[in-house]
Length: 133
Length: 416
Ligand SMILES: Cc1ncc(COP(=O)(O)O)c(C=O)c1O
View 1 (cartoon, protein in one colour):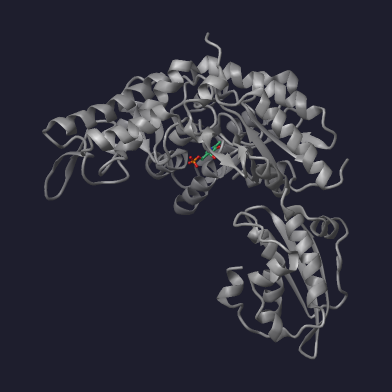
View 2 (tube, protein in one colour):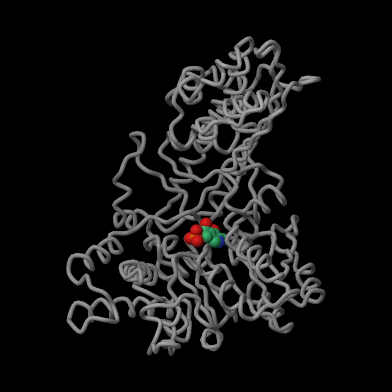
């Protein structure tokens, strides 16, 4: 099988990083993937325009949960402006594969939730690119 | 009764010459849509190539031929389900549209505020949402018959209590569940419902393609089903309705073909079933469905049913040998009570990951909520399920492939 279930995905799925809650988050954002029922809640702590901490809780397929695990590792310390600019390509680079049209929404669920949380923290509406993730 | 020979049947279906991910296609998603035999593909392309014309209109040879082929397809459908005649066969796009047509015409005209539609927890969204919409428009309400989880079937006590308590005007129920595979006893449901004066709609999307469904024996007032799940093309479906009900119901759409005469201020409706088919019909769809019914009738619905029962038994057996697999719906002792639809989950592996792993093996299965969120998430408490479903072209070797794919999924997810 090609790398859809590469070791990296499976190990992040089985032993997710940053799983759990943050006590006093700056923002909490919940998202849901209606076609497959993947659910994700992100807790963000923002300090001086940067992500100082991020954790997630969720239930879903390996692709969605592994990408949440890897994404939360990646974005710690990043500025909100950097996160606003992230897109599909960042997720594909991060997980090391293009999961194909049927599974892309699973892979991008965590990024969509994160970007929404960032926009909300800045009292902005999520842009179109975010909604389409 | 003839035996179904899937190896021979497969030769009629060009899709099985296609490779997916370099492997032969194993198609286990016929509950979503069936594959199409050459006979159906040819019937459609033959219409386009040799007698394409509008129907009911042209006074010339190819139009008469097209009209005859379209009407003939209705005769075949009427015979398949033992309707009295084509006057009871209304062509629509699919099951969903058939149910919505009942909601928007008969129910719209006959139900009033406070009236109840009784449905069940087993329904596909297509037999839930139209009633929610009707409730918003007319202030009717709808109630759900509970599922008896121990039996993977409807709770018939609850059904009788709700009939007594709510005195529904309509009971609308799925014949065979697209999630559990359960075949409901629609004959007895119809009999009890009629005693309380309710009309009965049966969602036959998963039954008509797979078993003998006889409307006069069941005694239902409406039956809805889709052409695309029974070897026919997409975009053609059937609403069977008793002719006396159709006669008393006003049409929903007005336009060409559904009238006999039009004056400035009023019109005279056409005869049944044309009164309910305004505008140019899906002619090629009807012709394709006719060819599909021919194909099924030649095999015999009882033979098809027997073949699928055997496959189901074989699959339930295979799956029961794999640790971590949970199967939903009636068990192996009750194969008679179910169609060839098997939903399952594998401990520790999400259904979408299972479907992706199957896909890489060339196996098509369905994963998700199967358009039955109240059943899958509410009653079964699962975010999503994997589902394999069988048809005439499937054989035991397809199930063996599916079983190895499950083992592969366990290996990838280190569940061994
Ligand atoms: C039980 C049942 N009812 C209704 C439908 C809806 O059929 P269609 O999408 O063809 O309208 C389906 C198909 O998925 C089904 O399985």
